[in-house]
Image (tube, rainbow over all chains, first blue to last red; front, top):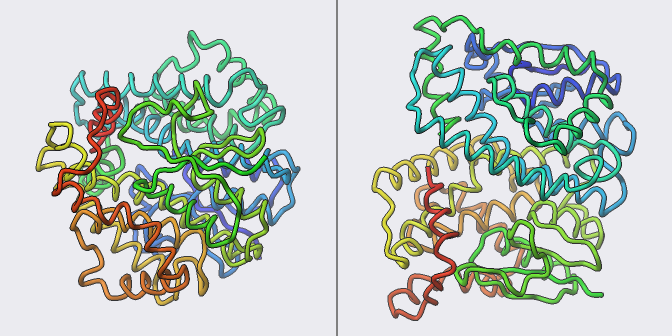
Amino acid sequence: MVLELYLDLLSQPCRAIYIFAKKNRIPFEMRTVELLKGQHLSDAFAQVNPLKKVPALKDGDFILTESVAILLYLTRKYQVPDYWYPQDLQARARVDEYLAWQHTALRRNCLRALWHKVMLPVFLGEPVPPQTLAATLSELDVTLQLLEDKFLQNKTFLAGAHISLADLVAITELMHPVGAGCQVFEGRPKLDAWRQRVEAALGKDLFQEAHEVILKAKDSPPADPTIKQKMMPGVLAMIR
Amino acid sequence: MDLELYLDLLSQPCRAVYIFAKKNGIPFKMHTMELCKGGSGQSPRVGTCRDIPEMRDMRFLSAKHTAILIYLSCKYQTADHWYPRDLQARARVHEYLGWHADHIRGTFGVPLWTRVLAPLIGTQVPEEKMERNRIAMDQALQQLEDKFLGDKAFLAGQQVTLADLMALEELIQPVAVGHDLFEGRQRLAAWRGRVEAFLGAELCQEAHGPILSVLELVAKKTFPVPQPEAYPNMLRRIARIP
C-alpha cells in the first residue's frame, strides 16, 4: 500500500516533508488538505487526525502526526542518505538540538510574522495594530540572530558540513516571513549564503515548486465569511 | 572526562534529565544551577544560549532537553522501552514530543511564574493571562488524555518512554503550586501512579522534593530571593506569558 501524506504547502512543516519525500524519491500519494478552505476542520479529516492539524502520514493502518516525528519516520523507514539524520551520536544530537529549539523559537516567530503581516489583514480582513506587528517583527529579528550566531556560526550547514533535517526545517520556516514580504536575509550575509547552499542542495526546481503557494500568500483573495468564522478561533490560538 | 550535567531541579526538563540519568545508573557529575540567581557564571557554555539543562560530555555540549535524553539513551544504551528501536513505536514517542513542545512546554510552567516567581520580584501577571493559561492547560490535558493516553498504560504504548517522563515533570509543576491537575482526571491520575511506581518512590521524592516544597519555603520566607541581575531575564520570561 502506498504511503499517503496529508499536506498543504502553505504550512511550513508540510513543505519540509514534501521536499524531503520528493528529494529522496519516496513514493507517496499527496492528499491536499486546504487550510484556507478550512478542510482541516472537516469531519473527514478528523478521522485521520483528531487534532485537526496537518501534516499527517498514513502508512497502511499506521497514522502519524507531528512534523518532526514524520520526518524521522521517513528517515528510518526509507534509509535515506545518512547526512539527513546522522548515525554518529554527537552529529545526531546536534540535529536533535536544533529540532528541539526551533519548535519553541523560530516556528512561533515565523508563523506570527506571516499572520500578523499578511494573513490576518489581507485574508481574514482583521487589521493588526502597528505596535503588535512591530513587536512580532522585532522578536523575529532576535530569533534570526540566534539562528545565525548560535546554530549556523561559521559552519556550512546548521549541524555541520552536510545538509540535515535541521536545515530543511529551518529554511521552510524562514520562507514564511519571506512569503509575507519580510527581508529576512537582507543584512545577514552569512544566513543568505547558507540559504543559497541549502537551495542548491535541495535543487532549485523542487525548492521553487514547494514554495509557490507561500510566495503567493500575499495575493490571497479575502476569505468568505463562513470560512472566516470557522477559522478564527484556531488562528487566534495558533498565533497567540 | 565524566558526563557533567548542569541542572536546576525546579525546572521540569532538568528533572526529567536528572531522573533519567539516575534511574538508568548513568554516572554523572551534577552542577547545580539556580535559575533565579541570574547569570550562569559557572556554566562552561559561555556566549551561547543559557538554556539549561546543559550537558558537558567531553567536548560535546548540548542544550536541549529532548536532545539530551535521546543522546543519553543512545550513548548509554538504556533499556529499549525508553526510546524504542521499533519504527512505529519510536515514531509514537516523537509524535508525543512534537505535540508536547507546542502544547505542554511553555504552558505548564506558567503557574510557578504567576504564583511564586513574579510576586517574588514585585510584579503581577494580569488575571486575564492566568485565566488563559488555565484554559490552555485544560485543553492540553484533555488532548493528552484522549489522544495520547487513550486506553494505554503509558503515553506512547504499554511501556514507559521518554514521553512519559517529559510529561510527568511538566504536570508536576502546577501541582507544586497548588493547582492539582489530576483531580477529577482518573485516567491521568492512574497514569501518574504507574509512571511514579516505575521510577520508584525514592527517586521521585528526591527529584520532586525541591519543587514540591516551593510554597512552604515561600511561606516561611526561606525561598532564595532572586538577585537583581536575574530580574531582566525573569521579566522577559514573564512578558512572554501569552
